[in-house]
Length: 176
Image (tube, rainbow, N blue to C red; front, side, top):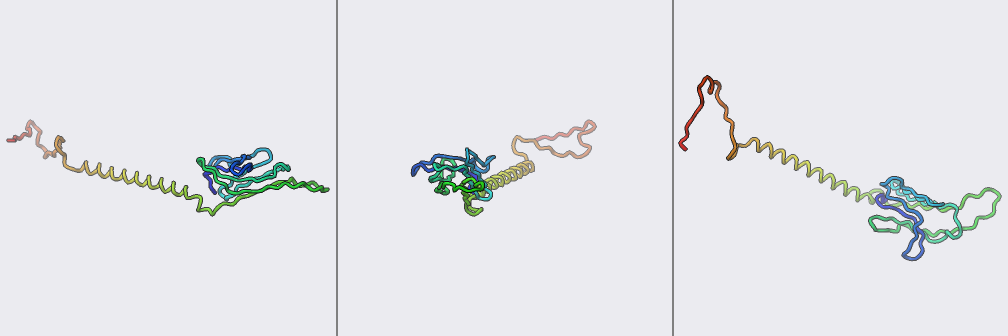
């Protein structure tokens, strides 16, 4: 299912060298399908299928082909296919085009989505920490407004009704 990896179909030239025939971007990008000449490559990551179709084959198309995945410079071979092209027999009815179709089914659904689950868990954890920090900051702010004023802060005292009116002022003396 490797939806985050690009896929390619290439012709094996030497042991470590492969000539790319087609490639498709990762399935999360739009249009996970490619066509070049008589070959098409389709990636159905949700079903775990990569389908290669080659039409109008010629004798010189015969050889060893590989399906590979690429991600961040890491290339992995999924399957090797030896293609043989046979001459069509003469028949009186219209012959079907010779073609080779190879579908590759990948591992069970839960295995390849582990990266997705790890990222989702990480994001949920970050969100939870952010919410907890907001709650702690809010409770500290509420506690500070409910505490006694410190040095350099003014405190409003309630005055009994009627005092400080009619020319009578409030005053007190301190010996400090």
